[in-house]
Structure formats: C-alpha cells, structure tokens
Image (tube, rainbow, N blue to C red; front, top):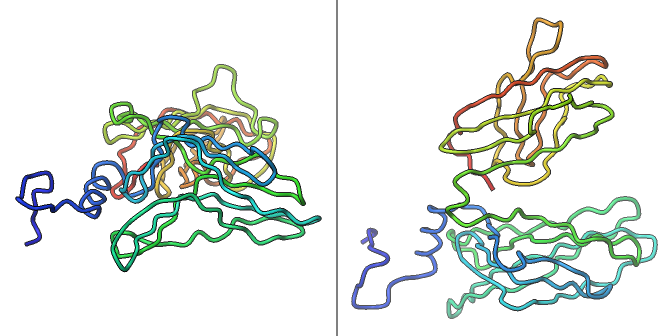
Length: 281
C-alpha cells in the first residue's frame, strides 16, 4: 500500500527518514536549506590549516541536521605560486549494509592552478532516488599560494517559517560609475509574497554602451531556482521603446537589449505572478 498516515499510530515502527524527507521537501523546499539558528554555521580560520564551523541547523534534501557545538575541519596546505579553492560541505551518507545514516563535515579539495582557482566538482546524488552519498556546500576556502583567504559563504539563511511568508532579494549595482543611480531611487529589491513577485528597481543614467548586461547583482536574500522573465521594467528617456529584464538563478538582474552611453533608464514598479515550478532559495 502506497498511502500512509505518516504521523499516525500503526502499532509498529513505521516512520522512516524517507518519509520525513518527502514531507519536508513538500513543506519547505527540495533545495538544501540553512536556517537562521545558532551561529548559522559561521566559518572562521582558527589557523592556516583549520576552519571552525559554528552552531547551526539545516536540511539536506529534506533531512534535518544540526551542529550544537563548533566543529573543525582541516584545510590542506597551499602550494607556492598556485591558487586553489576548497569547499567545506555537509556530507550525508547511508551505510548500504545496515541502512544507518549520518552527516559530517568534509572538505572537497580543489585543483591547484597557476592563474585562476576553480571550485571542485560537487558530487551529485539524490537521496530519495537511492543515493548513499549527498553533499551540501557551505563555504569556499580560497588559497593563494600558502595564504588562506577569507571564507566565502555559499548559502543564504532562511528565517523561521512564519518569517518566510515574505521573501526578499536585495540587489546592488554592478558599478555605480557605469550605472549612476538616480537620486531618491527605488529600493533595488525583488519581493516574493502570496504567489506574486514585486519588482522595485532604481532608475539610473548609463555612462557605458553595453548589450544584455547584469546591471544589478545579488547582495542578500533569496534567489529563484531558475531564470524568470520580468517583462518590461523600464523606459529610456526620449526613446519610444522600453526595456525588459530577467531575474537570473544567481540572483542578479539582466537588462535585456543593452543601453547607450548616455541613456537615462527610468525604471518603474512591476508585479508578476510566480511562474510554475519556480522555488526561492
């Protein structure tokens, strides 16, 4: 029988981690989530070879896990004249022999490169499809030679359920010399609430000529799980045409069609429905 009252009494132990993962994915998100609890997994370098991860609570593909006392991981030494990115991940593992499950912190080591560092490949695995391993990226540790740089956070924390009814993406200008903000401009935010997307981009004067361009970059908040077309969001002063935009999966906003080196782009508020199949993470 495939129908089950998961939280009901059945006379025998019947609630599995698979049950909880399905329900949590349906309620919250299929994506990995870090909640705003404890230190929210704050990362600090206690030495050149040691990264400390603070307390926090998260969900990896619907399975909840937490750190109640700071944990440390080892970062391998860098190489003189080489750049490297390491990624600290939460690693889920299910023992194929007895079915026992655990989560632990691991470091995925990047490949050294003399010119530019690249992140290592994060192994993919879907727990509900039977994978025995899954990885949740938390922090990037950049190394330049033997020098360890500032850790880079790879997640956005989620507030409590009742605080997440309204979700906001805060944007920042790609460059205020190229795109000069209008005085008393808008908030440069995209807000998601009650199935609607509220776009509030600030007007600007362009000093450069570009084609399709990410004028607004992600600063904080939520991102769409896939690119969303925002439609027409602006007019160009003195021109008989408007400008469309798209909200990218990395949180940035691209102005479509480009701008001229003296265009004054007059943005206006926009409200559109959330497209089917889009989540916000």
